[in-house]
Image 1 (cartoon, rainbow, N blue to C red):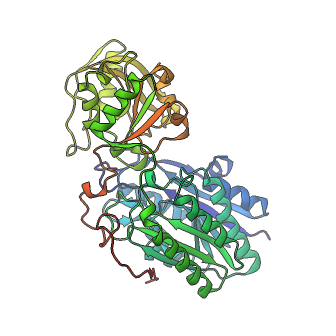
Image 2 (cartoon, rainbow, N blue to C red):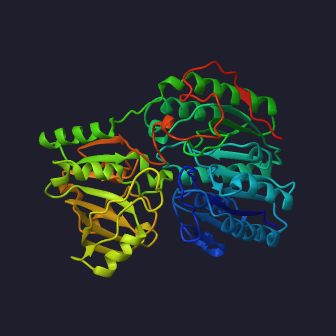
Image 3 (cartoon, helix red, strand yellow):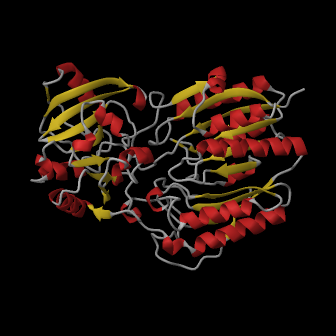
Length: 494
């Protein structure tokens, strides 16, 4: 009889500073046979293909995902959780579970999602192996460590190895089942906050650090090694970096390697910084103008403090106002393109008045009402794109706001893809300046930029952590509290 392994999971990066609640309308779910037939470049697809190739019967449940956002709605999380547990109960007996989890998913009024979900699964499956892939920005907790047999995180940022990480998780499942292993994990917590914009893996120090992980994984008896960087825009006590090791059976080996990896990481903490061109907001505008006057354009500026792909609300207007009020950037020909503001009320009115019509609704600060204020000047509709498929069917509108082309979205979506502005008739290659609500540039927009820079703007993904109102974060924490002596300790099960 073939081995039976259930696959599924929940995957979300939750920004606790974002007032938005991620609900039913934001979350897409793939269930049952649709999960098996989906051929995506994601961890669950890698796991499914690997398990099937090994002759294992794959039992699908569900995978629920959303663009990074605020915390999940509690009632909808509970609904999906019960559905997920129902799949497991109906599928028993099982030999193992192979999951795709993020590791920094939070639920409003509950807290961490992964630990809660894994604990509930363990009540149904108290003895069978459970393995999971994780995002590199996972936040390891005691509950996660206690209720899973092994995790492996992405090793690339941007995350170009999601499929391969799913393969790795499935390989741990296969080896455990076929060799009768009893895997053990060791985790060491490091009090460090690191943004993704300081930890791309193609540059130092992450280039070296990932090399150490890959080297450690070649040791006999080691199944997986990961640096889980945490998620700095979650105000939680568990935040920080974790060095995590999964060994075949030798707890001493797991502890030894985890401590070695943590010591290496701690020794490199001073090496993290913004490696791309980075400026305060006003200085970014000055630098962009100089570049344009020198004939070096398109210039792409990241409005990093309000980055929806990292979980921000996508409606903060402070940097847009600075651009509009600038006598050069606000009057470019062709106009500066600003991508994009999340404002469903404005988008609805834009579709009602049509191309050429006047939108009278105020723009922005629809959700985050503390960080900025709306733009009330009115705007002319230049183009409309209904149900754009590359943004989960969001309606898009291009507005002329005081001489600046502003992409406005009807849903909370990532703003990294120049295809979004192209769908509205903008030719990004002809623009002298483009602003995207993003941190480090994704490959699609990087190709267009003759010069790129990151502006340290306001919002719930503020890159200057000392500007965020942390209340629950553990201290001391580097770099917020400066440098300090610290004795590295293992994260232990309850």
